[in-house]
Image 1: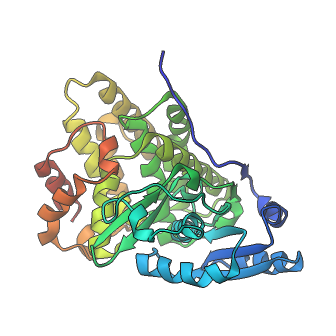
Image 2: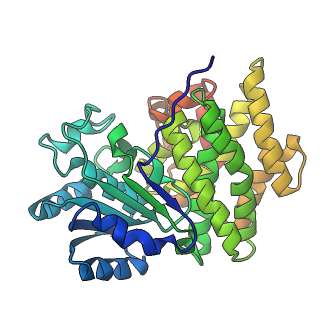
Image 3: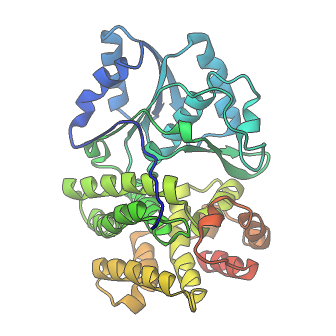
Length: 381
């Protein structure tokens, strides 16, 4: 009998208009609140004002893009004088990751660096995190459902994770209306991130029947919704994409990822390119590479075939052409290639070497050689 488990946020609220429940839910966790927000998230102003009307003391931290370790350390120094009861993050994956890391480290006694993978010791947290609330305003990273925070280390030219099961949110509140009218470029990159994060756990070597159920539901929704949103604004498609993104966060937290994220984490640290855009540009090449390496692996061939069927149905092509058609559609939608994102083609060899040590690579369903990783990178240039 197959064993399985599923780790989730302690409470989940999903639905259009559900943001109206945020204030009461947050105030149950305490009255000294750190609010981490994206720069362009207008609703965060409303939330802040409503929390203060409820008698809460709110310290605001503005997320200035994908968080770096110096950003994190500076924010920790700023919030510790408040002695916060909880941390609330409103925004895209960067704001949520920064908030999650602040909640995880605010009460810790150790040097924060020791808790990070690769650049540190990957040590478990020495104290439990503060209560944490995640309210996404983009549909892509699924960070509201994950147990890690991705932080960049400029001096190492790497993006690495702070990871602990206790970092799962106490409340994930997903209101798809907060993603309405998101700009085309953000919708594209975040949507491709969401798509990647339901495909990689589905083909992962660590998949289980619960993550499979989420991914089977989410993959067709993600590609269908993205295709619609590239043509016109549709609330129903925003709802589908938000659901797929959330399901992807749960799936990756429980089944892991694969070579797309293994490579993207290194490329992002060496180019400062956006994570979602990197995932989208790398996804077709990794699917093709996994397919080429799947000979004799009947289970993987069947799973990749199912992914191809779902993609092909949405893109109007046969199974055999689905992965190439996805790449062509991504080009048509206007996603940049790696070289235009600032990645140096001369870095392919070193990037492939570093990617092989990534924790995400452990979930890839087949072992991809150094040469295969270089081919994926060159194909995406």
